[in-house]
Amino acid sequence: MIALAILVAVLSINPVVNLFSSRQLMNSSFDPLQLVNTYGAFGSVERERYEIIIEGTNDDDPEQASFSPYEFRCKPGDPERRPCVVAPYQYRIDWQMWFAAMSSYRQHPWIVHLVYKLLLGDRAILSLLAHNPFPEHPPRYVRADLYRYELTRLADQTSAYWKREKVAPYLPAVSVDEPDLLQFLRRHRWAIEQNP
Image (cartoon, rainbow, N blue to C red; front, side, top):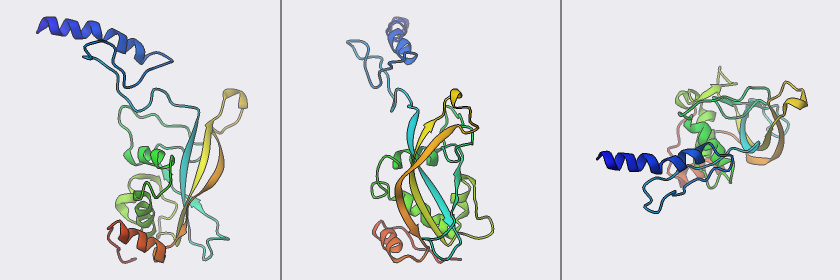
């Protein structure tokens, strides 16, 4: 047993060196016996990323409306909000929003359900967020847009931590009784609730 522990410790030297390398390898084996390896989704985090920003409004016409953003606990939103660091724990919904930004809501139907729950003012969903811009009653419409975020540099001399630009609409503005929204929810077998 001691010999095995020593063998694993010696074989673990290369994976530990790799962990601190600027050219980190992920999901790789470092010995012919494949006793030790590295595992992870990403070896590094880039300065640029895509984010979904969810916003709501109580205006009657979503085409002419002024929208207010929902803020998540840790994912980028307001460019002037300092990036948060939580490790090893990750806020799951923030993490999932990052993956959803890599493709369409059709590949991540849960985000449509999330929007529906925001339209209902669901307290369990709202408890996952850092800021609810509609504390009195749920919004009339909710939409989601895709933005490209880039970390600013110290030389930029700005109070913002991120530069961002809108890339495209992600999910059009929908209301709680929008027929297409309700049909989408039924197709994915989510319960339709009565609007309070």
